[in-house]
Length: 326
Image 1 (cartoon, helix red, strand yellow):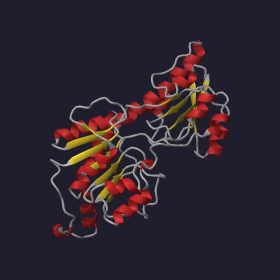
Image 2 (tube, helix red, strand yellow):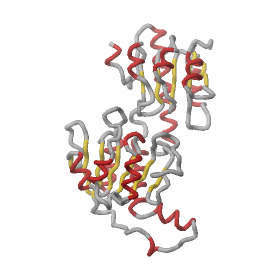
Image 3 (cartoon, rainbow, N blue to C red):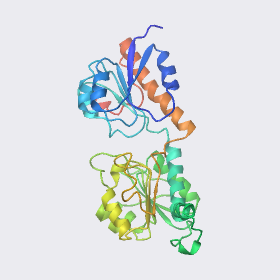
Image 4 (tube, rainbow, N blue to C red):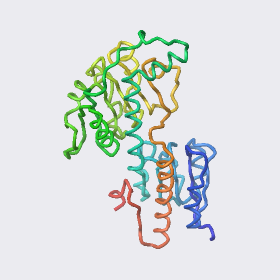
């Protein structure tokens, strides 16, 4: 098949691009792989491509403006804070994501972090690796059953976490924007959730209104025996405020799968605190979820390009700026 289109992939977090190439080859599209993901490099590469796929690299206005042929920007993930969606909408470019691909994995990772915090797994691991085998020096542990988990954001991953937590005997509180009830979850407001929860898990997207959703005042409302878990976006947490809250023992600990920036300086607080568990943006990952993500994100590109060819205006299911495209 003669190559008709060029598709730029800005960055990726897996070993190869076999899935992406296989999907694109079916429609005669060529994959252009960026060697660096800085704006200057991406602007140069974007000048003659028909689509852009991005994992974590930023796609600001300047990159969009440098891509006059671009027909779709496909986010290989859920969050959209790395893409200037408004600029895409102004130019009539659909922006897609894969919002439901890893909900089970994220819920499982959040639950694993909850167990690791509650049962001192992270702390014991550090101690034994340093040659210290001493239970009596450990922070106090509580029985998980009967404790209260507060979930901020009851979308796909938040609801799955709620279901798993309730099955383990946790009391579950939840905050969400919609009025829809979730079985096993007592819906409440953020203030009450912060006051009553023994564990707080974040499952909301990052945008201007949610940046530093957990800051100094929110941390002060938490119990000094409570733990914070973030598997959503690093910018949801004010890490300076979290470092101070840990130092003054306002909260008992935290588990952070996402940071701001990424990667963070692991030698600095709060990441180097003994009661903080850090994982490298891994909650989404499993052999199943990553393969699904890659395939679906690339299919979005293929659908948009083929829709342009057929003059039918076809769009995939998950176009986040559909309303702005008219």
